[in-house]
Length: 297
Image 1 (cartoon, helix red, strand yellow):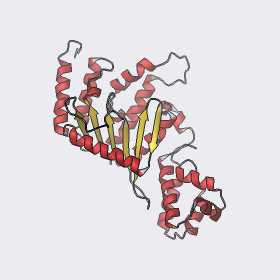
Image 2 (cartoon, rainbow, N blue to C red):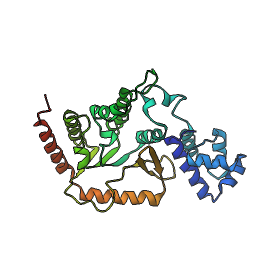
Image 3 (cartoon, rainbow, N blue to C red):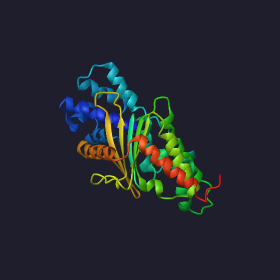
Image 4 (cartoon, rainbow, N blue to C red):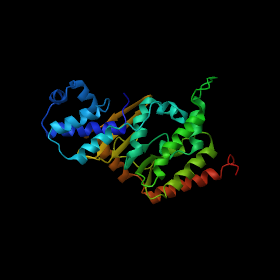
């Protein structure tokens, strides 16, 4: 069963209930007549309990607050109908990415570093197209994911930055991802101009780490996103690090591991150019691109 943001949040609430009641997963299973593995799967966000079992567990653990029980039941409701990820542009989201897309939609803060590639939420459509066109396989399959599917999927993700209550988004970009050319000078001018425009939004903060600034130890070479999702219940906000590597996405919610990346990000933010100087840096790069003979506008 696919993990969703709601299932992850519900799992944390169940775990909190058990901890506060000093009840093991095996004991919890016996209380409602299910196996320990069912409880463990629900806590991990990989499974689900029936509404009856969830209410019964809360009641037998001594919880009488009906409002809190309703929060649990609301989290249990799966907001993705069958086939949700397999139709239209959503086919472009690989299975490992789907939880991140879901978490982004309910997050109130996102922090990300970019080294060789501009972070996905900040990418211009032409830049997205340039990234995927060389990888597009030759296929006559009408159901195959196309470059335009990838463009639509990524721009759909980006809409969270423009909704009524958008999350805070803070990106630290290495100079290398601004100078690494994808699609030619015109595409890079579109991308950098897009970054300049986004940096003027109140919920988006972009900092540049120039080559001349010495990064404080490791950090910029890693590709990760720090996600914070507000808790609707008693478990406290969900803090998660999503680490991306070639062909792999890992979701880390271990507090020490997330805490280390949080400290690294904060050190990088102190070392990088401030938001205003970063905007000026990008404007300088844009002027350089406009002066090139390859740009015809």
